[in-house]
Length: 232
Length: 232
DNA sequence: CGCAAGCATTCTGTATGCAGAATTTAGTTT
DNA sequence: AAACTAAATTCTGCATACAGAATGCTTGCG
Image (cartoon, rainbow over all chains, first blue to last red; front, side, top):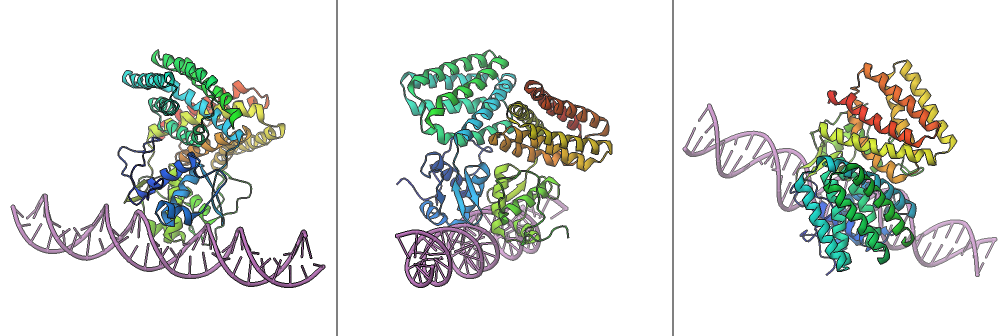
C-alpha cells in the first residue's frame, strides 16, 4: 500500500540530489531516501523515537541496514542519536529554522554570484524554462507543482554555480527545511511577493548581474523567514 | 601502541566539534572520530579502499559498528561508497579544495558579521586569549600548536555567531580541508601574511566592526587558497 | 606469448543471535 | 495514596554467520 517493501527498491525517486552519474541504487540508498521522505512528510513526527524493529519490519529490511541508514541520516542532522536509546527524529526549533534560512540565504547569494560567472547560456535558458513553468502553475494556483518547480529553480542555481561543495552544504540545509516548507504555510496573500522576487531573480540571472542576483537571493530567503515565521 | 583497541574508547579527543553538552562517548562516536583522524592524518590515504575486515581488526571492533561509522563518514563526504565495492577514502581535487575554501570564506564572513552582533564581551575576550597564545607560538615558530590554535580561533568565531546551522556546515567543510592543511604546506614566507590577517581579525572583532570582520575573514580564505594552491 | 574463460578466493551486504542497558510494571513500604 | 524498589520485559549495541557479488588466479586455447 503506502509502504511497499524495499526488497525491490523501486519508485524511490528523490528529486533531492543525484550523487554521481548513474549511481546504482543500493538498498542503503533506498532506505536512506525512504526514511528521509518519511521524516520530511511527517510520517515520522519530530521528537518520536525510531523503533528499529518496527520500522525495519515496515520497510521489509532487517535492523542492520536500517541502522546504517539511520547513522547516515544522523550525520545529515535529520535524526539524533542518544547512546543506548537509539535514534530520535530531530526537532527543529523556530530559531533553528531561522538560522538555517540565514545560512541558506548567504549560500544562495554566493551561488547566484558564481552562477553569473560560470553558467552557460544554455544553463540559464533551462532555468528560464523552469521559471516559466512555475509561473504557469502560479497562474493556475496549483500549489504542489509550483512548490516543486520552485525548489528545482533554487537547486538549479546552485548547480549553475559549478561549485560542488556549495551545492552539497546547500542540499543538507535544504533537506532540513523541506519538512517545514512541505507543510505549506505560506499564505496566499504572501505568495505574490515570492513570485515577484522570482521574477527579479530570473531577470538578474539573464543579464548576468551578479551583485543584483546575489542580493535578490539573499533577500528572498530573509523574506521567506518573514513569510513562514508565524506558521511554525 | 599507535592503535589501541577501541574496546575502551579513551584518548579520542577530537577538538573538532562537541555535539551536545556531555554527549556520553559511544563506541560509534569513537570509531567515527578515530577513522576521521586516520583519514585526516593520511594514515588512510585518499583513494585507498577501506577493507572492513582489516580495519575492524586494527580497531578491535567487529564489522557492524565499523560499517555504521563508515556510513556516517560517507554522509560527511570523507569516504565514498561504491555499492558492492565498499568504502573508499575520498580524493579531493584542487578544484574541490578551492571550491570548499570559497564557501568557507563566505560562511566565515557571515559568521563574523553575526559574531559582532551576538557575542558577549566575555566571548570576545576568549578569542583574544586564543589569539595571544597563537602569537606566542608564532614567535617561537612552533607550527603544530600554532596550527591548532588557528583552527580553534576560526571555530570560536563560528561559535560566537550563535548559529548552529552555520557552525554545522562550516564544520563539515573544515573537516574536509583539515587533511590538506595538516600536510602543512604554507611556506614560512607566507606565514607572516596569515598572521597579519589574524591581527586584523581580532581588532575588527574587538571593535565589533561587522563589515570589516566579515570582509577580513572572507579575504583570509581567499588568501589561504593562494598560499596553498601550489602545494596541492 | 598473449588472451580469455572458468574456477577459487575474498569481500561486501544482510540477517540473526546474544548480552547488557533502559524502561516499564508490579509489589511493597511508609 | 504516593513513592521507592525490584523484577520482568523490551530494546539497543555488537558479534557472528551466511549468501551473493566482485576480484584475482590458474589453466587452456589461439
